[in-house]
Image 1 (cartoon, one colour):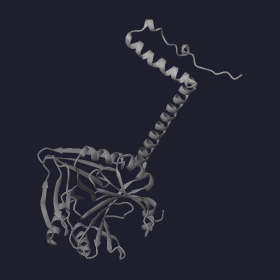
Image 2 (cartoon, helix red, strand yellow; image 1 turned 120 degrees about the vertical axis):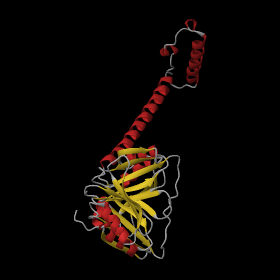
Image 3 (cartoon, one colour; image 1 turned 135 degrees about the vertical axis):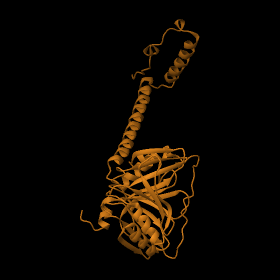
Image 4 (cartoon, rainbow, N blue to C red; image 1 turned 180 degrees about the horizontal axis):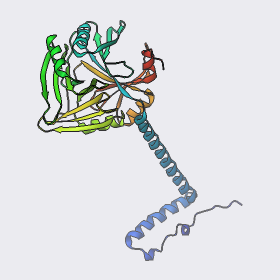
Length: 348
């Protein structure tokens, strides 16, 4: 005859009711009722409780595993071989802008690419080969000669050992000087500001010659702490320094993949009390190279970023990319490192 095994109340080691206070008696009453219900339904209480325990253990294990996977993905970002590649923006007269950058700013035309089907032409300019230097990617869209820069984009930064010479070149070529060379208050830095034919501002910084003259892109943000955390976590950038300027009512943060003296950086600027900006339609994005666009997209999602182009190859060039926007809506495109080198026809 099959025996029915029923749990004994004594196995739960319940204390005597006479030794409990009223609150404890009520708790024991509910516990005892629950055990009797298991008994009455013919369930093995010990097996039920063990199953529940196993589920909790499995769930905890899955949570731990998931957290570890997220941590690994975000940690990978810190070790990915990244650098700022291009600043991409739109211009109304490509030949005029190229001439200005070459004659006044000393840039070289690195390459040019016409895309008739997409009705635009790109020109890449900078101070050295694209596989090792930051460059600008100018985009001319057929038939469009004017864009709105808005008030969110700040400026590009150029470093020279003699900015007065650059200012005079710009002046001689009919360019616009928006700020004459002057010493920055409280520092030894000399800066000036000029404007290119499309109205983009360039900050000229006087310093000893460096490997990266085109060294900065400045963008305005609505919450500086939020932006710093995003670029550190999602992009793997370092916070190089911050500076508060109560007189100018702003705080800036410099983030990037290396020291300002040797590599291009982002300058994020928060103006006291301003949380939103008009981005216009002139400035487009920053491009950054990565060893894996798929892992990059995963890390951006884990860091709370928004992917606006899922990772994968572009149809016409087969170059793998992914794109996202930061908390303020500024766009960044990540480009596969090997694919980019192949595009430049550089031996890997």
